[in-house]
Length: 386
Ligand code: RM4
Ligand code: MN
Ligand code: MN
Image (cartoon, rainbow, N blue to C red; front, side):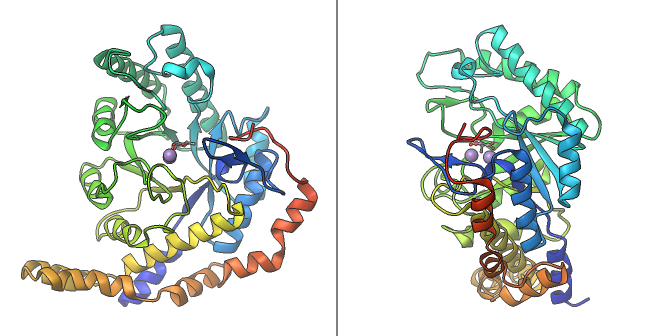
């Protein structure tokens, strides 16, 4: 197979999870903006996810968030996913909205609150089993705002203890993905602030605990592609939450602010001998149309991956071996400058999707049809809008 054929076949196998919570109402710290046609429940969120997959051919799974996506009978949700031609992605517990968690969840100073948090995590393990999901994706809002507010070492002990309980209850087919975030909502000391803090926890827990990298969760200027290499070489890179940011955890469309960084990340994710980890979009589209934003996000991921697949790895290794600093750099730039849009369009068509998914979305009038059937604005349950 030629390099191009190889790239084409790898690109066709790209598999992105879109987030149920990215379809519902969301907002800034200041307001939640309601959009006409927004899904009113998890079944309609799944319907939107299916539309994104139909258009792009590359978004075959949907990540779920509980209790936002809670239903009386999980079998009904499983059936709905099947009917829509989607798989269930990671299950994301929610330990950041209940007033009990104001001072933390699994690190909270009070035993009662920690027990409640652990019980929710265990419930999510059960839900995942019922839905056939293979991952718990954990993000904790835990941390402190003022020095002296709580004992940092004790918080670390509580965290390990609580997660130890959850890990022990995890069935074979599920893994724990442990996300970290430097800042927000705690601003003095976040309990899992960086990849190192998460990695240490994962190493204590066991092989099925791995780190999840969210692109909005680092200090400015952090070299994410190097984190991919470090975690990858320890076998601990569990997954990615894609989005883009300018300043903080902005959750903008992936690749919209810094497409070059996204390309560099994919260069490491797709390096020879590496298997792609779980790839999920984690975004909140506050001012842009949601389905359209998700489609564009998938397209940006396809293009970044395609460019990374076109890197001439032999030429790169040769230049590196000869200490040809700018020669090696040029190999990367060559791939980055390639117009991969025709390649991506070809692959999408082969997958039974659309050469131009955004045009197809507009022509189908999906947004208008949903606004008609689902109604206009007004807060709905499940998600930030509730
Ligand atoms: C957090 C984090 C989590 C996501 C929530 C909604 O900042 O990225 O992954 O579930 O936001
Ligand atoms: Mn995230
Ligand atoms: Mn985030």
